[in-house]
Amino acid sequence: MRLGIQLGYGGEGFAQAVDEVAEFEAAGADLVVVPEAYSFDAVSQLGYLAARTTRMELASGVMQLYTRTPTLTAMTAAGLDYVSGGRFSLGLGASGPQVIEGFHGVAYDAPLARTREIVEICRRVWRRETLVHEGERYRIPLPPARPLKLINRPVRDRIPILLAAMGPRNVALAAEIADGWQALFLDPAVSPEVFGPALAEGRARRDPALGPLDVMVPLPFAVAEPTDHLLARHRAQLALYIGGMGTFAGDLVRRYGYVAETATIRELFRSGRRAEAAAAVPERLVHATALVGPPADLRDRVARLAAAGVTTLLVSPLAATRAERVKEVVELKHVLIDGSL
Image 1 (tube, rainbow, N blue to C red):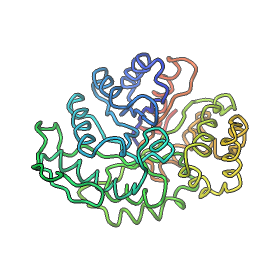
Image 2: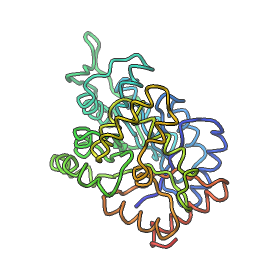
Image 3: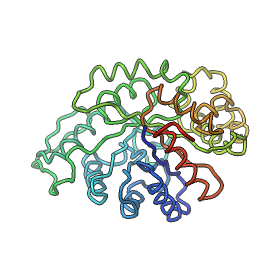
Image 4: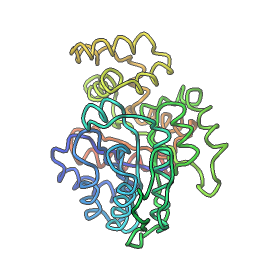
């Protein structure tokens, strides 16, 4: 199992956060993931990270497929792969109507069809094919223009693509065409039942040349008792996604069995009672979707994540000081290597 670092959305203190990422790299972290949402763009920060790291992989988590043309997405990924010396993975996702329509003013339509076509176009661009694409959603070139191919020769003609997905059809698509699946709020106790059929459906159509699917899960992380204070930010994030970020997270949590709780959180959040919405997030869900606990509990939790098919942990260290956060990342790396903590 690989160990990754998931950066936050805020952007405040980014230079200091990158200093810390360099220490995480020295401590054995395998990759760092930069989000986008409706905060700063991921690309500028990934370019900065490329210059400040030497070994660890870099990934977007995730670039939104509606806000860039397919060819610009491919060009941007090739550029990030170039400046990082072949260390970039393209994390790509449809986001949701609230962000795409509410912030970008772009119609949110046909996410699966668009995802499939964009993945196909990106891979053709990276192979430097003369680009001709006649799809349901994208047509390249538009007449009477002539087709072109990428001027530069990419470091790699197969940059890994990581698709973010929560719904069954999106998860099946990720398992079919992507190098990795970026999950969110994964509860290992129920995820095989909730995601298993979709993953099996996608893998049945998967090209063996893609290799095994990398299953990536973001988790708040600390070697400590899981107190309310330590998990407060995670609880608030769950409330935001369930109550305020469209339907996808709410649908997922309902599939986990929290039907009435989802309706309550959504009603409270949308009426402006955000603290009450966070308080309504079920305790079991908060703990199940975090990696926080004393050493013995963490070893067991990592084992359960592995049994659920997770291959990459994307942790957000929660310890109070930088020294403690780096120390705990070292300890977690030991768990992943030999089971010790």
